[in-house]
Amino acid sequence: MPDHYAPYSCMDNSRQEIARVLVRKISSSLSILGSTHILSLVWKKWRLDGPTKMDPYQRIMAMYGVFDILFSFFYFFLGTWMTPAETGWWGAVGNEKTCTMQGFFFMMGYGTAAYQMTLSLQMLLLVAYMWTPVQFAELLERKLHVFHIFTAIFMSLMPIFFDSYNPECGNCRPVPKPYWCGDWVLGDGSTECVRGDDTLAGVYQFIFWIIVSVITLFCTGSMVGIYLSVYLQERRMARYSFEDEDDAGEGYKESKRIRNTMILYTSSFYICWIIPFMCWYVPHSTPALYIIGDFFFPLMGFFHMLVFTLPKCVKYQNENPRTSIVVCYFFVIFQNQIDFVKRV
Image (tube, rainbow, N blue to C red):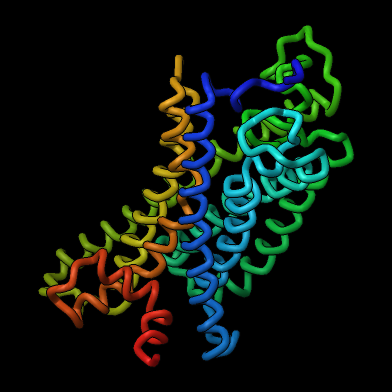
């Protein structure tokens, strides 16, 4: 094995390497399933009701699904299959071109973070600032779509011009070759880089941590803002002695629904981003923690699908009171397939 590749995809032995690769494929498959289901629901509504009946929430989730499918499929599911065969990693059958392609779609994963923030922003404006979906669509939505798509493409293209998509620990990312060369944050300061640019890698590492920090703070702040806004509405209801939510009007019920939805979406972000980062970067992290982080990180598309389809599941459960929520999800997600089998 060449000296510029870490053995066993940065694991201690081949069994740990295989476990890491398989865990990534399983969790990314679930995420792809979830995002594909979201896209199918949005497409169905667009086809039946027309584009004018679509609201920003559905379009945001559709765009999240597109970026998540690309990110999960090329980076996590294909994994070592796209890394150069010379790495000697388990399953590696690719070359420099497939490595560059994987790195490109890894950076396109920026779109998932961008649309997570956009979702938080939209819900914050609806609840805390009393915007309507039409206002959001007219004043912000199109600008945000253009900005996110342009930024994702720009960030994904830049490393190509510097040959900076190279293998690191089982996948290809914007790092030099070998990834420990040069003077950037992971460099040892003495090894010479044979491909890529260590300065660019340092810039992208800095951008990566900025994105993680900003999205964490913004999504958390939005959730707190929405919670406080609904709490103040509840205090006003208590002051005027409303006996039930119907007396308070549709606005309060909608705000409460959005609050609960926002808590679920933000919780899925914590599970799929914060927990993996704690597993990966905790001092003296072990291979077992790395594998746990690798399992949770690609799962956000799956969790988002659970939140997106929750209203249908609750409706199904109300119509079938003795049905568990797990069975409800099964019938809601695979409704078309079940109907087809019944027809046959």
